[in-house]
Length: 530
Image 1 (cartoon, helix red, strand yellow):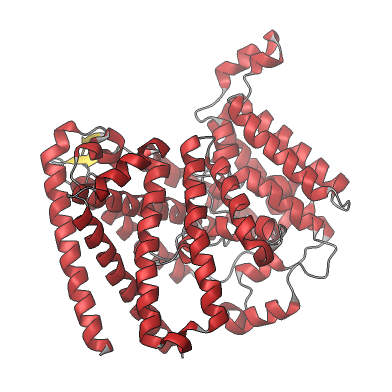
Image 2 (cartoon, rainbow, N blue to C red):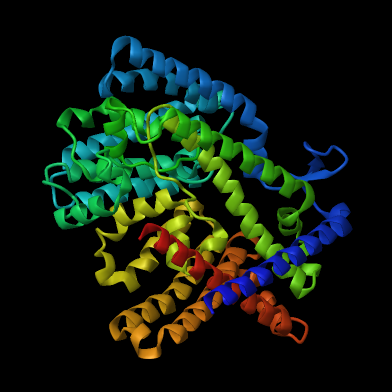
């Protein structure tokens, strides 16, 4: 029965993707003259390329110079470490020298703002870390600058007096407050300042992680079993007092490979590896990692040359499409976003690994292999998820106050990305969709649903829930990144009309099939690991 079901599911999936790709090619061909952001192609010069996404366009255009600069930086740091046997503090000065060259090009005279705010945070942490008011003070300080940096557009020098106004002509090539607050993809520096504060605050404890939890982790972690230290062990461990020095802290905030976009790394893990470089990835592993990245880049080039999903979203053309085409564009945009972030984050992670710093993988699982919201958010910007759990979710009370904490966490996530109403709408929609999932999971665990309903019935219910969850996830992301909160009523009306109902039914059926396929993948992994 399982084999027959699997064959039928695979055949359905093949048919679905054949239809989606053919329809997408037809849409892109018929409407390309009306779309914004199309440019001359790279792989095929006679075809236009979808360069409508600013993040991807800028990253792709600067890829050659980024690769050249990071190669020079990496070779310089490696040579200095080898020649002078430098440890954490010595390497922090090497990287600070490199970082200030890098930041001077990016931000010009505005580097002074970064150093000033970072210094203020360091002084605050050192003076108040042992007080009971410390979490409140740390969050207040960082939220204050998270918001004011954006409101005042990085503080023009002229606001400090006319004699400083000339420095506004030397603000560099990239707005510092976008990197400091929001990065190209996220407010990575603010998160690092909070990470340093909490790790120092917890430094006098035996361990921030419960020993039973740690032992359980060691039993299940293949890296720890091989007598190495995984990222989690490094992050949960304690450091010596000298490893919280100002030079190491500042190096952590502006470490070049991770400065622009992350992934996000905790202070303890970073400082540990600054002294002893990572050994979990061999030279061969890094070569394979790089080759896989190049292959993924080729796939992105193919997608953007033939399938103009993001251009449809940017141009507003989706408003004039049929319900089935709206679904195709929405599904395509979600996949485009995943591949874009996958490539950008893996590129910077590769450079970090080459420099001896292991950081979490941000996209460890494909977007099409997540059938519930919890697994989706654990695998979409995973390093940020780890940060939220360690520094926000657990201090707020963890699973004991889960239904309340999810609202606080996602509201912060929205503000962290940008000060926009549509992002708050996205965050709160996600919370609304999260609540039924959490309640159903709790009831299932409490009543041992598999034994009550039978394995078959429970599996079917999980697949149906997965279909609804994936649909809700698509809606939340369309609201947050494409149509905005004003478009919710329009979207609902399009799919509840006579023409849209069959599409909605087909969409739920497709995601039901997808959920069942994911179950089979999980079963195969369990059998392989048994």
